[in-house]
Image (cartoon, rainbow, N blue to C red):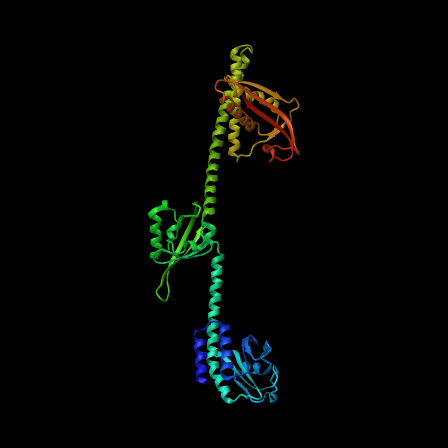
Length: 451
């Protein structure tokens, strides 16, 4: 019977890796086979013993210090203890009525005590030396099983910890088989592509690639599967058809069984590429600004020389002469050209406008006259006599208003009427959809209508 019990327990322990099942199997098998009334198993954690499973007791002491009781003595010394009469042993801790004898054996794994197996019996059914020998025989298998189960639990915990780490990474971790089929992909893939990991498992890695890239990328994947560790960049196709730039780095791994897999990582480069494109644009704008500044400076010098001639002609000509008016128109056009050079210089300085108080009541008539010069379009203008000044770059506001008036004129090829209305307004509580985004305060409103 003893051999059958040992064999039964050994069979269970050899295949079981769950410590809870191991302890339950041990305690119940020992109690049922030999009709032991009270059986407990404890695990040692630091300097205390913690109960794992028991039968026969309403409750047991836990934790038990190594300095306390027969349990503590067994774990502390690593030696089995057989107590024929519990009344005579000063270390006995009373836990149940009418207990007469006790066998306590250490559970040892790799020469280290990891717990104790304890059997107690009533006075009418005393334990013997044969019970001690049986528990010692069982304890060898139990200690090994505990060590194996603990190791398995540690491996599981380590695997869960690293899996959790992979799953929290922003980068995408993936594995492929030798055919380039995805065998694992971390949850980060859904954040970038919209595909859940399970949607990609079993599909070719090229599923994530833009088909327009064609054979080049397919060749890259084949090289990766063949063992190439050279990173490469490509546009990853998302579930909704968008594109994201990524860099793929991978290496071939062969395990002890000879199984070959590609382990790799995808790093999202979309934002980095976008920033690089913006940097290039800014660099080009800076170069363009330098060029514009140089042209504006030279052009301004030419205009300054040219402007001297109309001024001299106005001195010579009679104001009533028709040529005098033409000279004035030419001078006005040259002044507008000079304003354009100032706008170019503003752009060259980074686009910051040169703001100053501007009175539109004197500016609007000149702008309209210049924009409609030679046109069949008439202009009617209504300007509030108390029109407020505005804080603006005179050159830029002139260009804006002039372009609007020219657009209105071009919309009427056979001529028509352009109406310009300038008035003061204050936005505080009443707003239209067009002015909803403006802060409260005083404004000058200019309305330009064509017929």
